[in-house]
Length: 231
Image (cartoon, rainbow, N blue to C red; front, side, top):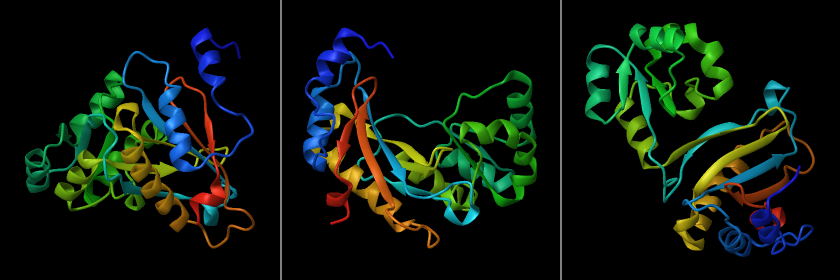
């Protein structure tokens, strides 16, 4: 892949084969950010599991202490009192069959997280094929299928993120913005890694943390020493 001049200059600051300590890696991520806007910092975690097997799935959610730095739009599928509760809690969109029709008919996806009460899952299931591939399908493990919609919305707005394996056994998640500074980014990173390590499946054998890379939007990746993470 051909890279631009700014990227190549930034990449020179990173030793490709070196495994950095967390703070050192996050310092470099900030130094090598090349965007004019406040770039997102992401963690990319390759795990020693096989996501094709149900007993080796790694999925969950965690509230980052300093949030992600971006406004999260929450859609809630609920009816009656729960719909009113969701609106009062600050949900951006609340509805039922009407929202299903809007998503199906207009290809509408102006939201980032979907929450549903348990009784609405049969309705949400109608659009599972379009929500699933986008990582938007509500899931009990992530706390997005719940009767306590107020709590779910509050946590999401406060910085709750969902983590899950992709087909290559890698988790990709935001841990904040470049403007956060090393200390806040490190707090968020440590919280995330603690959750991922705790979620290790009993069926997983061998090395669990294969590799961990942090990077800013469009910036070069910086490898974190996975041994130091678990110390």
